[in-house]
Image 1 (cartoon, helix red, strand yellow):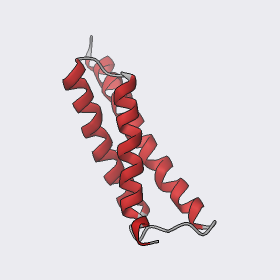
Image 2: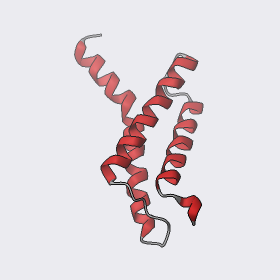
Image 3: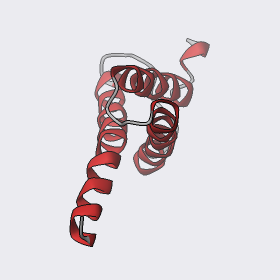
Image 4: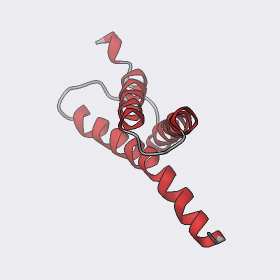
Length: 94
């Protein structure tokens, strides 16, 4: 595998964590219009936190099972993203 293929493989490994982070942050902003708690963090910061936590989950799943893309890893990714967004919106106060 050449360097170009390695780069594409790495970007495809990172994409779910960062895309889910962006979607969570945007969905939280949309839900704020419905009266749900709004995050006091900036959008860029929220996406960064989600991306870093998501990458940690993806790397943990890769280290634990030796392959990427296991359903348990995807489930953990969703749980971590939802928990992080809940924390950033300070939803326990409402």
